[in-house]
Length: 160
Image 1 (cartoon, rainbow, N blue to C red):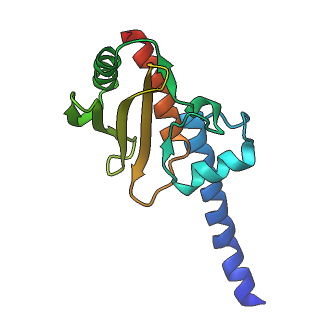
Image 2 (cartoon, rainbow, N blue to C red):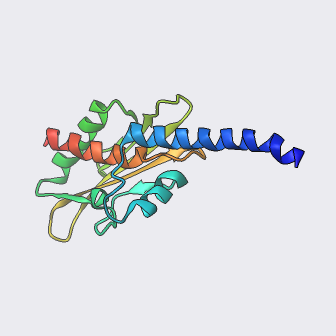
């Protein structure tokens, strides 16, 4: 019984600290928690550290690939400009393959976000924007990768 009394307070303190960290991370990045596919699914994704990528039929509405009725070159130039405007560290640019890789900073300096961007041609002749963002390291992202993709989409619109 004495052992339980000694361990309960530190465990409760750790639990409360973990809740504060999760709540703080979610408040900072403000991911769309209540949107489809639901808060439970989203919380699992935001706390697992799983990569985020756009797809034509994504269950997450904000992660659906965007199609642009413009030339791939024009969309790619806007994608590069948007990455620079977001102050990402550009790692590689391949204008022939319409491919961009970059690193984004988190508030914690040792943690980086890795971003891959591709401009793909659709069957309809449109330019589709594919984005993948993940966290370098074993950390959950608290919705940072989703927020990064949403903000990137908004920024690209400014350059088109």
